[in-house]
Amino acid sequence: MRSSSPSRQKRLPGIDVVRLIGAFGVIVIHLSPSTVAAERFSLGFQVFCVPFFALISLYFLVPKARDTTRPVGNAIAWDRILVPYLIWSTLYLLMRLVKARLTGEALTLDWISVLFAGSAAVHLYFLPWLLYLQLILVALVRTGTGLREGKLRWQPLAILFGCLAYHLLMRQMGYRDISSNFGLSLVYCLLAWLLFALAQRPAWLRFALPAGALLLVTAQAWESTQTAYTTPTHLMLLAGFAAALLARGLPGWESGSRMTKLLSTYYGIYLIHFGWLEVLEFSAAKAGVNLAPYSVPLTLAVAAVVFIASLASVLLIRKSTLLAYLLLGEGRSPLTRKN
Image 1 (tube, one colour):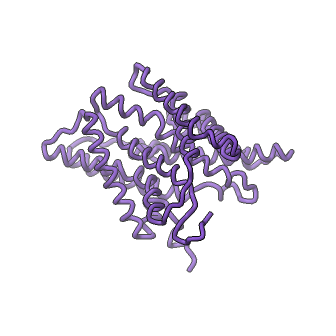
Image 2 (cartoon, rainbow, N blue to C red):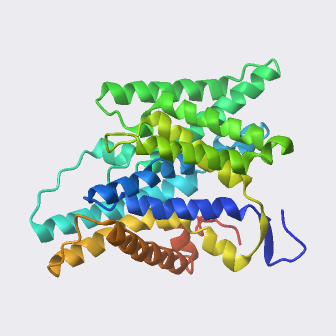
Image 3 (cartoon, one colour):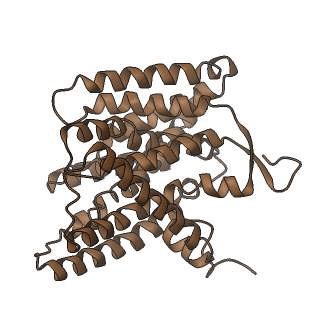
């Protein structure tokens, strides 16, 4: 929805603010090895960042999934996910190759994992998983809509069975990555659908902010009692849903075009940050500076530098329509756009 001013947009920028915090948190998570205190600090982000990203992305997909006039394939953000995934997988593989040559380390690659599980870089797994999530969500919603109308829609049902078959095939081949986990992905889709249903009820929505905050604090407190430096799946689901509920409950406000562009850099920051982190750590090592183990102050400082560098990179990339499409998945391909 647009306001009367063409330069200002009515949106929910609070969600983008939480997304930016999540992007910063992902950088913190990837700073390792760390001291005990820094590891505990990073777990505070790990418990909710990626689950929140997944749930809130699915939340915004629900309206498209419910639109039965739209073909199933048109509801999926193919360009937004696949194009940057292929480009960044290639770039990160080249970066790893150069690093291996400079350090004399051997580089071994599992091409199935690279192509389907995002192993070209530690964070790229999220993109094939997000595509898998979107396929399941659209198929699930269309199937449910059809059943409520007394119809059995075979296409979405076939997609669901196809996603299950993909899960079984990958497990049979020895790949147990989250990017092909049908059961867990199904739970994420159901939670996103629940979040959307709650958001359609003003009486429930007014409690979203305090309820989300309370659940998130509960999840953080629960996480702090864990003895191992890993976060259980059920705790991440709780924290992710809590963060999504909190973000949806934040009040909307008028955001100018510049602020909108700034707030929407979260996806690009997620894609780019690991490259900057690799460059920073490699340069420091060459200069004889050993950053690890990261302390809490050093974690915050390095994360801030990488965050700012990544944000600036996104803004610079956006100056080219072609680069914005290839590296960020923004807009449509200039090669296919009509004049």
